Length: 392
Image 1 (cartoon, helix red, strand yellow):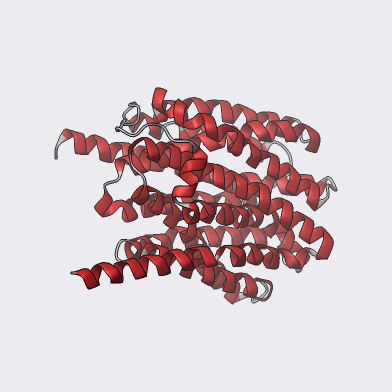
Image 2 (tube, rainbow, N blue to C red):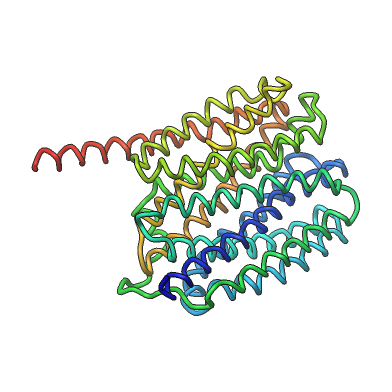
């Protein structure tokens, strides 16, 4: 095997392993902080606002990220961030106050954003086009495993005291270890000049908005699903267990679905996943109380919903190269931040105003507003292919 190819595979393995741990941390963080605040009697609207601040940091840091990635090796930057992030979670546990957590979660959000921007840029830089879907599928599957294990770890540690915060900080430090496998090199520079994020957005609005809507749904579920489940009469541990099963569904189903994405129209597949997710949200209040069926529902729902994000990452790598790829990856992460601003705030307001059982309907409305975009993009692409075939 040529050395360059060996280094490429070793670097891919290091980035993917590191992000598995980061996603595990992410999987424990949102339900943990929501449960701590809810136990203090904080309103769901204020919990949503507290979550929103963490997301705002992603948007604030986004304009600076492409320039930083041109100057510093992404893997080196990720290692520095993991150390700082571990310290921040210790501070969060020592001072569990909603008002103190506002500025603290802003900094946590900025650090987490850099980890995602760096990892997605590295994955798309290292993955070759003919197996991009499968590599990103592995990345998404391993990340989903982290998400799935997060709530499970919270079941083991509980949400009281410092133990969950110590465990989270230790795991963050572990995320830096696989990064020693990654070649500490700056991203390749192509002939394109750096492009503004707004200009990049208009090159692929459907792809970018997919992450806005997905993030709004994912963050809302991570934050409010345990509270939604408790309101329906199921236990906290059972609700956290269903979150774990959703993550397992993403982890397992994303691999065959990513293989499928290498063989079908990816935009059409995106539209199909959005539509099926809407059906799943309609069924959610009934399904989570359906005893044995609840696990099967959560598994399938997690797999289909998680594929929306995976397809977004695949489409970014397919659409953008070189300097544009760094900018597009940054914007894609910023769109995640925008979604996490919109989602928990709207869902928290909706649950306070209309009742906790309305959470799935608020999320469904967001997907319904987005669905025409991938449908229109799929139809335009289909028409363009037909015209090309007619000329041949």
